[in-house]
Length: 167
Length: 101
Image (cartoon, rainbow over all chains, first blue to last red):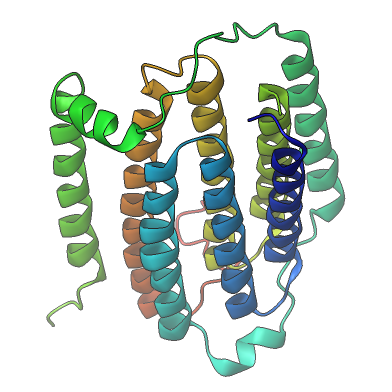
């Protein structure tokens, strides 16, 4: 299970994810940014599979790439004019933002290296999908129902906000 | 492969997302960077689920909730940006300052 192939897979997927994330923050044309974001999410779905979370990987592809990315593409089509794609996309806080993000990364990596994780010696559950289904309808049934209400409220709110005023 | 690999990858993605969210002028660009940060956090959760509680699957359940909230957040943000665009005719956050004293 802990073979060389797994390590190579991890580094390839991690490399794709990091490079496409950098493309998302550096490209000027927003449509290209959204396509890079989809690539990053695909690489992360692959990483989920290396973590034995097949169901999460499928949910990631369905919801993020299938719904959220398409939503962003529609948003770009609805708001930006064609001339907008060549204007400057970043503000004047590049230097201080770079320092802040670097400090954040340094802090996170330091904390992660100093913490001793309580790694479980147990073997991984192979068939996670049916177990997730069971858990969602037994232990986590209240948060599950609550989250569906939250989703419904957000969708109604979105429709109300985006509707044209009748005047 | 250890847990640290996944956590450090998530930290790198989170820092990239932070940098982008701070420097983008376009509201849609900021939203894209927030999605990067949410994905980084989900990698953390799934990694913890695999290495620390492999039998309880708590991290994976939390990831499902997190993805749902991210989708709801995107829908509301889309509606807000369309509404702002209709009123101000721009999505540049430097120019949207109606509520700034």
